[in-house]
Structures are given as C-alpha cells and as structure tokens.
Length: 262
Ligand code: SF4
Image (cartoon, rainbow, N blue to C red):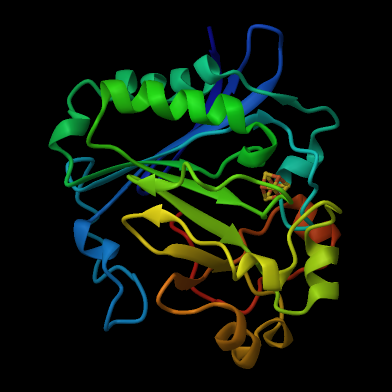
C-alpha cells in the first residue's frame, strides 16, 4: 500500500509524494487541460488561449513513476537527488492510478474527453518493462478507454512490439549532437540517434520526439530530417523544468521560454 507523504497543488493539478511500504519515495501527478490543447496542428504549439483551464472532464492526465529514483541520471532531472533506486512492481504502478482516481470522486475517467497515463515521472520505463507491461494490461482491463504514453531514452535491445493501438512511445532525444546527448543522458547502453529514427510502432499515434533544448546548437534540422521521417514521428519542443540538479549542471532555462503552469 502506497502512503501519501505530501502534496503540492499547482494551477492545473496536484503532485503527490508517495512512499512504498518499504520506504522508497516516488511521485505521481494529477493534471488537466482544456481539450483543444491536444491539437497543436496548424498552431505549432499547444499554448493556452486564456486561463480557463477547464477540469478533469476534458484532458485528464496521470503521470506515474515506474521506479523510485532512477539509474540514468539525466543532467536536468531532479530524480538525480535520490541516492538509491528500485523498480516498482506492476501493482505499485496501478495503485498510483487508483490513488489519483480515488482523490477525485467527483470525476469519472470514462467521461473525460481524453484520459491518459504518462509514464514520465520517476524512472526509465524500459528498465522495468515487464512490470510496466503488466500494469498496462491491468489498467486497460479496468479503463479500456485509456491512452498510455511511454517515455524512454531508448534502451538498446528494447522490444517495441507491444507499442500499439492505445499505447504511444515518446523518445527523449534532447540534442541532435551525439556527444551532447551522451552528456545530458549519461546512460551507456542506449540507442544512437540513427537507431532511434528506425523505430516503428503500431500505435494509433505517431512516436513523439521530445527535445528539451538547452542550447540552439542542440537543434539540427538537417539531422532531424535525415533520421526522423515525419510520417512516423512528431517533434515536440519542451521547456526545462528548472530544479536543483539542472542548476548544479548549469543548464539555465533552455531555449523554449514558455513554462509549464505552476
Ligand atoms: S530517465 Fe527520466 S527519470 Fe531517469 S534520470 Fe532521465 S529524465 Fe529522470
């Protein structure tokens, strides 16, 4: 049973710090946005039109952790403050979803225009992939209308064949300079930029390439065009969420000046 330790409320949701029975910390987020922000086509960005944020009947997003801590140690990730890590079990991942749904008895996920689970909080999902797959099966059984977004740095020898229908892949690329990418994501056993561009899935949505750009030099349109066919990939530019680890690594505020809501 996960225990609530504390929570932080922000404009469009809540972030909860939880703890496993054996004392490992993790976090889960409960956020919502107006439905129109789902579609950035033509507008090139999914910026809010105004501060009418609607509620969980529009886009309801639960961000789960797959691990407590993370062995990858990305240079901008606050998870790096934790000294230990452990994989979470499938039940601990499912329980995070139930925890958020129970916190919002006035909302029915079935009635939301979009209900999605983002595997984007603590941990690299493909380093705990059997538990993640089992959790997806369990969540699908109870909430068949859900959409899962699995975010990965691209671990070598990963099997992407289960990424289909209501499961979509998001790849953390962050730089098109391989040296810089290796520095930002200092995990040896990962796919090269060229190999990432060869990933194909059976998802009903394109694979997202996420670029949290530190400097403009990290963006190379020629390489993007060469490696990532727009038929299969959707490019997303994200701001840096500044934290003590990103500050320690002198990353600044990044290229994208738009900020997530606080
Ligand atoms: S893989 Fe994800 S959780 Fe792990 S250090 Fe990188 S950004 Fe953080």
